[in-house]
Length: 226
Image 1: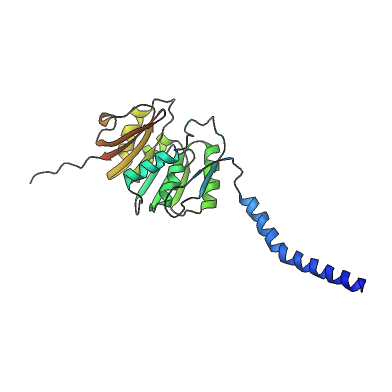
Image 2: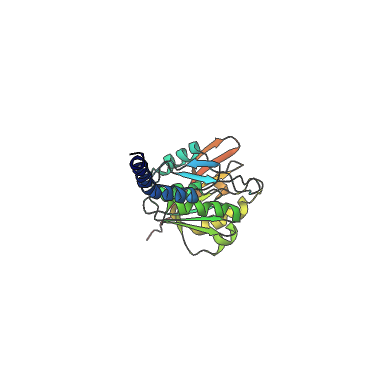
């Protein structure tokens, strides 16, 4: 009787182990694919709403300053809640927060440009997890990319390092890649005016801590009288 009971217990344990094995494999796979970074922000709108973007401490990367949730909410109130069909460019992308947000909100194409290999590695890991086919990551110098790309963009996000006074160099390159009626969103340590981005009008401006953030709209081309 005892032997029969022990055999039954063994059979039950074996059956439980067999059922648990797939779960264990799934758990191992999930742990393997998790991004081991303690810092995180959430995508706040679109198809990937509430999904996490994780990133490491990259204090040595000048452009690594993720745009806070409140500022992103304000930005997309300015732009409208979706970017359906828009081509977007995120320069000095850092964590990729704006690029991932734009891709989630229906942009036809998003290119994120970042020169730091460490920041690009973190973005690549997030992109692999989030699976956004409309997002392209480019590990390159921002000035070189802006000067060479033949593409034009309806929405441009730009967040240059605050320690570098690069705006005068960037302004003509931004104009070069802007499609007709483009929007340019920029974060900068100084408040920017219309004169700082020729051919554009500043339509929105706000401040969060030391960061000034702005939205510029491209001026319409003058019509020629016949």
